[in-house]
Length: 272
Image (tube, rainbow, N blue to C red):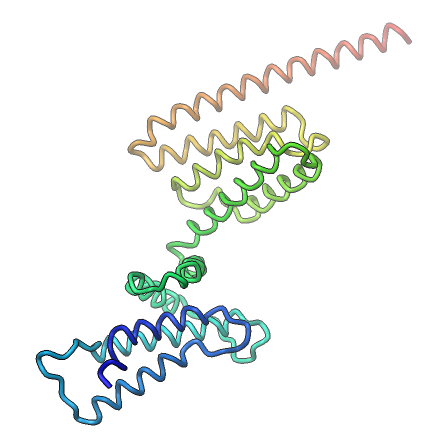
C-alpha cells in the first residue's frame, strides 16, 4: 500500500494530468490524481503507522498542492474547449498557481511530457501580466525569422512574401509593441523588422517610405538600449549612427526626386 502513495506515484499522477490537459476527447485530466488522493487518505484512515525504515511519503500539504494543480489543469482543459458547457476562464491567481507548480515539478516531468509542458508554460505565461509581453514578442520573433528565411529563398513568390510582410507589420502595430517595456527580445524583433522593411510591397512603399521606417526603428532601438542601460549603452551609439545614415539617404533621395520633377516640368514646358 505504501508504494501506491509514494512520491513516484504522485508525480506519475501529475504527469498524467499534464499529458491530458490538451486532449480533445473530453477526458478528465485529474482522474488519476483523485485515485491517488483516495488511496493516500485511506492509508492514513486505516491507522497504519510508518516506521523509521519506510520510504518517505508526501506530506498532506504536498498532496493537497498536487491535487489542486491537477484540478486546475482540468479546469484549463475545459476553458480552452469552446464546445464544452462547463468551460470557465481561469483567474490570474489560478494561472500563477499553475505556473509556480510547473516550476516546482519540472524535474519530475517525464521526457514524453516535455513538449506539452513547454506549450503549457507558454500559454500560462501569456495570461500572466509579468510574462505576457515576453511571450508575445518571442512569438513575433519566431514569425519574423520564418519570414526572413522565406524572403531569402530562391524561387519564392516575391509578391506573396511582400503581402505576408505587410500583414506582419500591421499585426505588430495593432499589438502596439512599441508600448512594451524595453527588453533584449524587443531589440531582437526590431532588428529583424529592419531586414523585413526591404521586402514591403514596392507599389505601396517607395525608397523614401522605407527610409522613414528604418529611421523610426533605429530611433526605437536607440531608446530601448538607453532604457536597458549597462552593456547596451555601447550598442545604442550604433543605432544612433544608423538613424543618421538613413536620414542622409532620405535627404539625398528627396533631392534627386525634386531634381527629376524639375527636369520633367522644364522639358514639358520646352516641348509644348
